[in-house]
Image 1: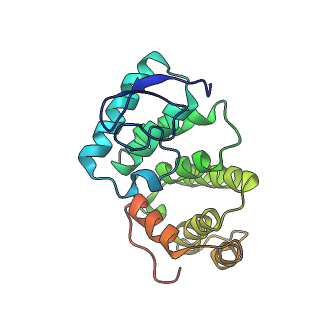
Image 2: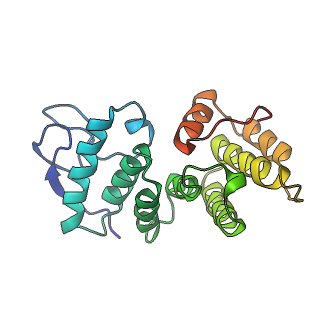
Image 3: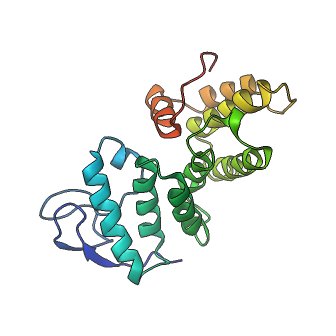
Length: 197
C-alpha cells in the first residue's frame, strides 16, 4: 500500500486534482475523505459521485491507502457494509497506524445489525479491531463502541466479560466521549441506541 500522490478528477466538479490537495481549487470540496465527518452530512447523490470517482482512480492505483479509505467512507455512508469492510481492510494491510480504519472496519462487521444478532466469531473480530484502534489511539468513541458490544452481545446473552459494558462506558467517559460521536455511531450502525448506554 502506498500514500503516493495520485491524479484524479475531483469528485465534486471533475477538475484534475491530486490526492496531495486537501480541497479542490475550483469547487472547494474535499479531495480525499479522511474522516467520516466529511461524508456524514453529504447528500447521497454526492456520496455516490465521490465513490465513483474513487473507484475509477483505484482501478489504476489499487493499493493507494488514501483512496481505499476514502471509498470505504463513502460505502459506509451508503450502508454498503461488505464493500466498506473490504476497502477498510485493504487500507489496513500496509497502514497499521490509522486507528480510524480499524474502528470503522469493526463497525462494518456488524453489517447493519445489532451486536446481539451477530455470531460470536464476528463479535470476536469486532473486538480485535476495536482493541487495535485503542492501542493506536484511546478515543472515547472507541471505548463507547466496545461498551455497546459488551452490553448488546455479552450482557444481553449473560456472558461474563472483562471489561464489562459499565467499565467500558466509564473508560469512554474518561477518554472524552462526545454526544455527537455517539449519535453518528448509531446512525452508521443503523441500529437503535440502547437506553442503558
